Image (tube, rainbow, N blue to C red; front, side, top):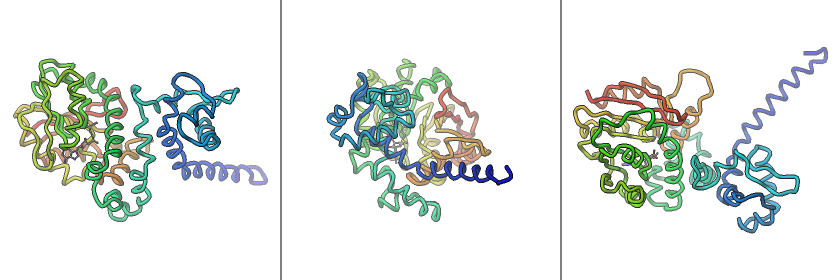
Length: 347
Ligand SMILES: C[S@@+](CC[C@H](N)C(=O)[O-])C[C@H]1O[C@@H](n2cnc3c(N)ncnc32)[C@H](O)[C@@H]1O
């Protein structure tokens, strides 16, 4: 600090600026989401475009769109060239649809009212420990998705793209070659089971999910050429899961549920699994015991607000396994930061 105390003031100003940027985080969510919804990254796939061309194709107001894009460009998402045309940048590329690692559906979902409104009620979740989503919508996430086709399509698209990215790292980190039958519990549209069956022609599989979701997976399974080895089963994992698998995979499933409901799902897996079978959870991450930056601590809050679920520590997962008749044997990191495998065996 100098004799006038200037450095203290400037430290305070820097702190205030940093905290303001964090407070203002929702503007980033919304401008990215709107650009994704308008398909701007797809429109720029073939090269730079001027704002009038973009606005016409995207059905947007040119000046307003230009203001959104220049703010995004200040974050490195798209760039405004000297000639005034906008172009893709590496940070904008994941906003394209259908590319490996596409984040377009996630971006759209996070900006939609049905998703952010519960976040406006975070305080309810913090006071009650319950999902704000249920308070706002009067039903849980999956009940809501069952009644809103557009929201379900965005949600399933987001899951499919994030699962697609994690599939190879999972296959590279875990050896499925000794198994005869995989049951993918809450398998969504089947990205993971398709990849496992393709890599292991000796295996058969069952994709199990809510009836409306399992139905939506049919075309994907057929197009992947594994329909003769993959059964689709619609049902409720709180009632039962298909029997006789020697590996049960639950990817991004138990984090959606509180402890009691997770134990109920795992107990149904325990009833169904063969004696020497393996239970594999694929989790977005394991919550570490430290202050270090860890995206999983934020995903945990999505679970609190949206599903009423929780991201867990290794000890917490171990305790759930024990309550359901499994023993945690290994935690296996994969090459993807978003996929950790937790293995259990029936006891
Ligand atoms: C977060 S998604 C994960 C999907 C998929 N495993 C993946 O990683 O892409 C959770 C899945 O659980 C399914 N699910 C929710 N409630 C269910 C229930 N009661 N019975 C069966 N599946 C259910 C959802 O439909 C959804 O596909």
